[in-house]
Each structure stands twice: as C-alpha cells, then as structure tokens.
Length: 120
Image (spheres, rainbow, N blue to C red):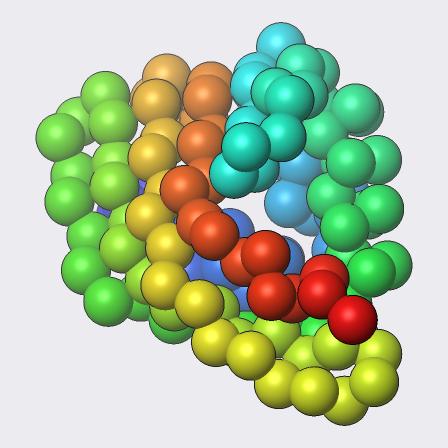
C-alpha cells in the first residue's frame, strides 16, 4: 500500500476513536510512545492505552502537513484539532515518527506538547 494511504488510514482510525483499528497498524510487539509518557509495548496494550486517551476527549481531527518516507521510517508532520468534553477546541502541531517493517509500524513515536488540552 502506498505510504500516503497508510498514513491516511492511520489518521482516520484515530479520528474515529477506534483503538482496535489503530492498533492493527502496529506489529504485535510494537512500541507506542505519546509525548513524554512512558512507552507502551504490545498491540493489545496499545489499543487499551489509546482507548483511554480517546475517552478523555470528545473528538479529534488530524491533518497532514508533510510526509517524509525513508523506506524503513516515515515522518508525519501534522496538526490535530481536539474538542474537549466541555466543547473547547484546541489545535496543536505534532510530528510522528514511525519505524517500519514492511507496511507495519514497529515503533510509533508522537512528539507533541498538548499540555493545555488537559488544563482546567
């Protein structure tokens, strides 16, 4: 599958808040690291982790600003607009780094500072 299509499908699974579909892009023993949080290892643990995050927001919408595909790694520069449960809307820039094994992600690293999202 073309890498742009892969990223679009990953993005769509996140925006649907579908932790199971999201986790299926990652290898069984894959690693997921969100910002400064501890890394999560294993597809099932990643699914549970992202579902926990999804429960903390009303919705999210991601965009692609630029993609770099180096074969064994992909860098996705983007923006995400979150809607909190109190309906406050906030947009943040991010950079995701993917280490790849074929069409599967082995390491999914999110670089973002969305601290204001959880401020009262």
